[in-house]
Length: 335
Image (cartoon, rainbow, N blue to C red; front, side, top):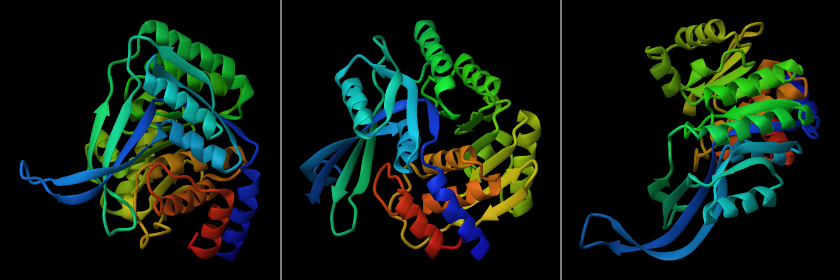
């Protein structure tokens, strides 16, 4: 285990400086926070007295933030509307160091906005009581699709890897996915995806990630024992010509099934301080992609990603792990 720790510690500084193109659905995450004062007489719900509001970049912007937090450079390709939410999102991207040069403005679609209502109380973090999504799940127009694929083709020569973050709100069409995969492989670059259930679109991607529920639904079989996870991963490896599959398992950690490195179950690094699991899957795919770009094996990439996910669930919202925080996790948690 000490050898593993030392190898992971040496890997962390090597993550810096690598450039990743993140393609996918971009969201504006809006948070409305209030203090619970009483129960409503109109319905069995708390009445919240407004205290504050803040916005964060979400969706595909979250893996991009994780890449930047570890010293990498992230450029995003996605879509926003020509509305106030879109302008705010572009400003937020720049503010966290993400290059928005691949973002297309679509005048016929709204910027996807997820509004979370949070109630403050005696707990460490405000608790989410409701969420309202303003979005359009239809495929993007042919014109926007053409602009997106053009920007992918223009930007791939400037990066070291391509990551697709498919939140299934229309951006990751067949043409966009093919542009990402073919463009990356034409130049010998790693191509990874957080497919969120749409696995069969991603033929030929090196690394494919999904969670347990998504895998069960896609493969129409329950995942209970380790053999189930191994069979599920091997099925996707065969069907999609992938090199590795990561299945996130919540409190059980994650499973890696690799064509050349076998099946590994990595228990959750942190099970006692879990406050908000929002965006933990984004952290997994971002850190794993960055580690592979830095030359790590799939097993070590999965180990580092598992530790990073254990760190971000200690925070609220779309959180990230810095290099210093990730090094602490390596030194103090089971790798």
